Length: 178
Image (cartoon, rainbow, N blue to C red; front, top):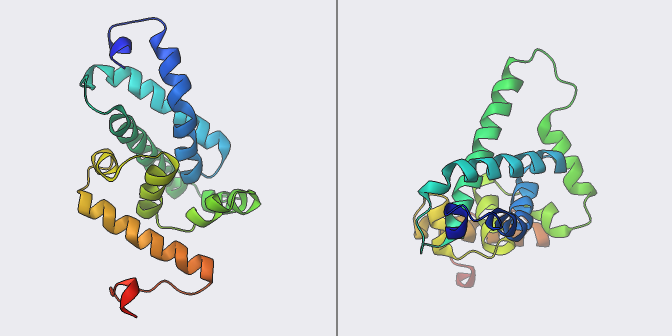
């Protein structure tokens, strides 16, 4: 990223090649279709290009990149909601198309993660699919480490319940206290 900031002509290609697969997975878990995920990825790279001056050399790159990606995803979600709200009739709702794509997918992880609430899904994808640390996820989501840990814990409980086909426990008691 430092080379990219210094206008090294080879730096963008290296950066895009190394980060795009993980970013595409991030968007794929949170988007209704592959096309939408690719559009979000392209939008993210445009925003990274425009915001490259704000990256501080020496700091971790992933939280900075994922913060931008998260904002692009949220902006896109809001834009789609505004459009849907103003449309008189829609043949297919984006959520229905997203569920169909997920269940047709052969990857069980995608199907399970898709059932989580947005905030929990986002944290799990960053932690497990992108391999980020809790601290990096906290910076990327503008949250505290404690909030990220709580969302991850709740997501794990929900995933465990889905895997065992029982409703998630919401009593607040620790798993070993039963």
